[in-house]
Image 1: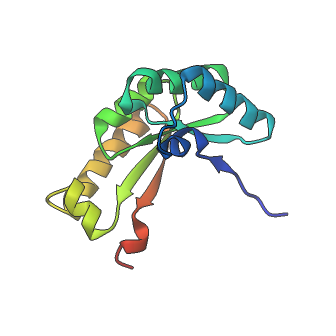
Image 2: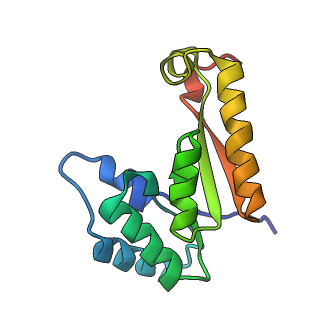
Image 3: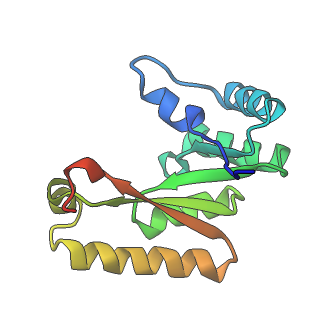
Length: 143
């Protein structure tokens, strides 16, 4: 038997469509529906955006404790702090790997990005949370 997990990104990625924004109540209802469908991993949003976004992530984390509620973060410790404040125990870090994005986000390049990653991971581990790292813009990254 093969083992797999579905990670649903509707609550974060779905809002990237023009004119679409979910309220905290709508995000909770969608998360509940996904849970009923058997999805166990939900990327709930970006708490660093504040306001309703942080409220929604916090609400989902509190109301659906059996789910793996994941918060999306840049490689910035303030993002990680915002996610932890919402009560999530799973933090996704977006790591830019193409030269283009590395240059835009980290003027000193890869060494600066790796330093930021170290700080974020250390903070996450200090509170006993887990992390994942996504290769942002990997298609244009060096092999």
